[in-house]
Amino acid sequence: MKDEEIDQILNKAAAAAPEPAPELLQHVAESIRPSLQPVHPLAPAWLLSNGLVLVCLAVSLAGALRAGLFGFARMDPFERALIFPALAILLWAAARTFVAEMIPGSLRRIAPPVLLLLTGAALVGLFAFLFHDPATGHFVPVGLVCLGIGLLHAVPAALLSWLVLRRGFATNPVSAGLIAGTLGGLAGVSLLELHCPNFETAHVLVWHTAVVPVAAGLGALTGVLIRMRRLRPEA
Amino acid sequence: MLPRDDGGPLLTARSILHEEAEIDPEGEKTVYPMHSESNLEVLMVRYQQGDFAAATAIVEAFSPQLYRFFAAQSHSRADADDLLQETWLRIHKVRHTYRTGEPALPWFYAIARYVRIDHYRKTIRSTAGARQLEERAITSASLAERPDAANDLEALLAPLSESQREVIEMLKVAGMSLEEVARATSSSVGSVKQKVHRAYKKLRQTMSAAGLRKEPGEPLS
Image 1 (spheres, rainbow over the protein chains, first blue to last red):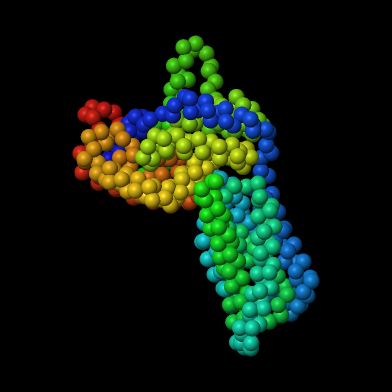
Image 2 (cartoon, rainbow over the protein chains, first blue to last red):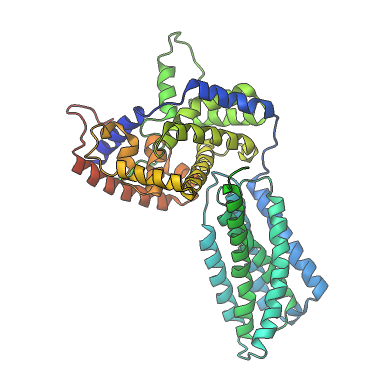
């Protein structure tokens, strides 16, 4: 059986499919008439993406200025030249993906879970390449502090990003939550790179990188809760 | 062979309306608002500006296509009616998210798909719904057992998985291009191609087993 034959059978069946009743269409048109006010379309995607990047940079910079730029001061120019542009590129990619998630019918260049994996891999690769201090002093307590600080800034960055895109509509809230968390997580990592002077390889690899997946997980969880709320039967 | 990536290979709202334009009795240039995607986009902009005539034109021209999309997977006409109404209400609520210059069909289908998935999730949450779905699975299990299967889109697509079915509906029934389907389903063009390839493989098997063939002498297109 050829593909053309399958096409023709499907075509024939589609032609025989039922049509909606004219009364139903009339009812639909009338039901939207009372609330048919003019609306402002969403801003262009590039503008929204740039807005998200600026929000995240502002959060991480404000946090780092408040806590001290100790990490930035300890880095050599080569480390600065690699880490911050890489973070900016990842932030931009996450922002583009988040915007696409919040606008139905957008072309998705990369799926949020894939971007999360790539972000994690890129950060691990970059940190492993730049930091070679094998010490692991106070690995867990110091690490938990860094994770906490990172998340403390990731959450507001994600919430502010959500605020920028509040007029959007996520057809998949879990996916949108995941990418919002990834974006916030990257803001948290940016802050840690500016602030944290601990360059022990294990510390940076584990605790700094962990901010992104943890924040993404929290975002996805929020998305699950939003979806459950949407699915709840109306009273 | 994979479907063409040129949009509208089969029966579509676009092609149906185009045929109507060609048989215009006046012989004058007739403007049907839904002839092309660009006209749909113009109407969407007018709809965003609060033009009721544009809103009505979109509802009337696009509803049959949406209805087929729902009917192919709904087990009752009432379900398809509900889904259609719910979709239009949702479209109306988020009409500001449509951006000028972007293709409108994937935007419509992304919202319709969301409404259908949510409806499906709500249905399987209820015991009665689960029972209904079970019954539906039984009734659409075999093409060979259905004498009217060749004219029943739901029965024809029943052997496919949910994601394959929706891709085939958009691509072959609604006549969208691969990129439009990718946009509507939030996936990549490669992933859509793969689903179509697998769906055709399965359809070939089940249709051949059920003895479904085109009528002798019937043209292929």
